[in-house]
Length: 320
Image (tube, rainbow, N blue to C red; front, side, top):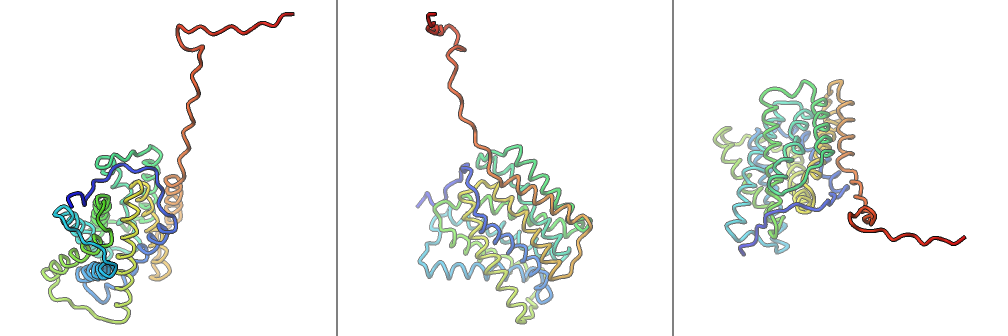
């Protein structure tokens, strides 16, 4: 039907699910370590294509088994195509190439600039108000991420990681327009089509796929595709339907926090000496963004004596 895609409007101050956001950001942080490991067995673009394609196929199998409905209108498929280009094609290609050129922790920092990038588009497209407190807190949080990155965020890898952040921001903005479409099927189709586009691009740039199908690589691909892509993005898109995008995106500040922690424990990376200060600033900023806003006090009733031209009845005077 023609109304499948419903433009988003400003949302009420609905808060994202805390357990869901902690799980999603932890999984996404782990993905940067997984990408670093998997690049030992597969070239950059073919690895990105596999992550997207396997995730899309898994979601479509799951959705078909549940008899969910695929988009049926040109508007619905246009949305799927736009998501395939941004949230899958550009985002994954730039993200994987960024990890290849940077430390995993630094790439996680730069690829998660979404909270700042989304402020103006969310206001312009969906009329979401941005309070001064939120804007300042997000700016402080990003400053903390820059401190965490230290001097490791320069060069082509940094540019690619920021491009990944911009593409994922575009995907989040587009996801608000899913409306009455089924989020599982939209996610499945856009990841499958995005993976196909990445595979075609990989064939042109990298040639035939040279992948070492070790048990390690299969396990990493399964975690990246099924958990870090299929599950995590469906949860993310569902939250984007009901929450303010500036508040929702603030949670992605935790992704590099988890990513750096996993990189330290699993990869032996050693961040700069500014890491503790930067992470502390990130957590304080996130607390300011996510804490409940103070309730607006009710307006007191007007004072009759302040109304012009209205006489105030005299009090009765007690005798004696």
